[in-house]
Length: 263
Image (tube, rainbow, N blue to C red):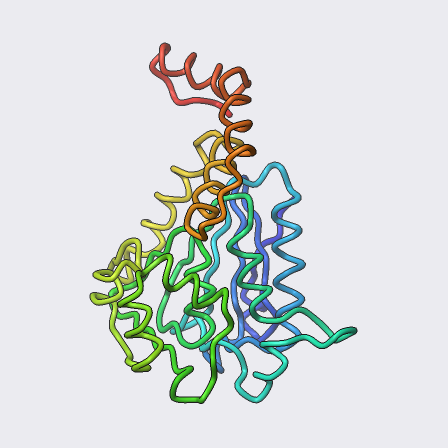
């Protein structure tokens, strides 16, 4: 299955999915509004996440944006609908989208091609890795807007960045640049704009070459640890199963034969 993004897709649209081999890319595509997310985009993203996770041939997901920004976050004019979806409402909440992205079984990379603002800072944090250009900046304006952010987003900030950095970013509404984003651990790595695709490709290739079931299980355990909710029994079962599974047999065989494994 292949879905390629063509030049015609540069017109503003809901998020776009492309698939090449074992790699899926979701691109936010409203560049004239800095890829601001609209209410209808939330359901689209959930559907794309479900589709990617259901495809066993896919090994890694990349999330990025079109143009000069990753995303300006959620449309402020619709922000009430972003935080709560009433019973029988039209679609998922923004919180549900970020949580679903964090819970995806396969590894995820956020390709931060520019500014990352508001709720999109949490979308990026929900990814396993964040590679950003050296001109990127981030800004969490909740305190300036009078918004108490949703709990799972605050938890992600604390678990990823620590209490002090979470307080600084949420309570001061301070804008910080790429070098500071890297220093506090928001960025996994920072590169020049002309090196962004090469670095994303390098990491995606590395992830796609590892044992998928082992990675999915360990990602789940790491996320559960981070949230203080490890299912110890399930993690131990996955560990025991791995000791006699196909992946470890191929991994050991390839190591002995001094070749790349074929999972």
